[in-house]
Image 1 (cartoon, rainbow, N blue to C red):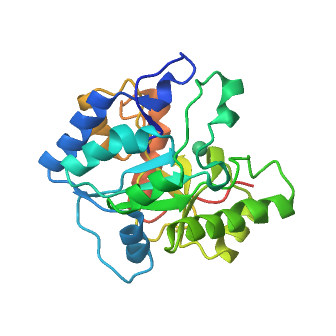
Image 2 (cartoon, rainbow, N blue to C red):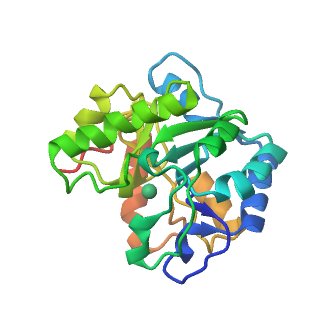
Length: 258
Ligand SMILES: [Zn+2]
């Protein structure tokens, strides 16, 4: 899971800004180490039992849809022939990331309709990241339905293709939002819960592994191999390791938070 591919402009946003050179070396490493990039359609078909998944499959995702995706990430994805999936804030096309200003982020322009069509035409699968990036655990049910269903309709109008994937803003999900995502017809929905996706996982509660600004190639490769954002064996990560082992054994599944 990536957000911005670019240099951080403030300290507050540093964690979520992957510098272009790092992104380039990470994509090259994925290719050279025999990983097989897939998009979320392939993951969805595999989870549905209607398609296979290569052994070392990896799904590159971007949240928020800032302009750097087209300007900086797309040429690198093309260089390595990497499919990817990007989650777009459908009500803010061509606007900016105003929901992050209060948190100290710099002003970043979001992709507009022309950018989205260019990404679509270059093997980037586009999903919804709501209409306005509101925290779905903090708004009423009408607003949840609008954010989930209207964002899909609006993106489908813009793209002329089906939009089948969703990412919960801030990764926050409660029962009503989960139900709204299912009713709207999405095939998958991504959270920010840490971990790789395993067979049998709920397609509407997919975990991901976040890539941070300070991940050098050694840390990045460990993250991919371990399927964990914290790949160091430290006491506080032992619980996570135990959970992963249970998950491998089919004894643990991520659940909806209550
Ligand atoms: Zn977001």
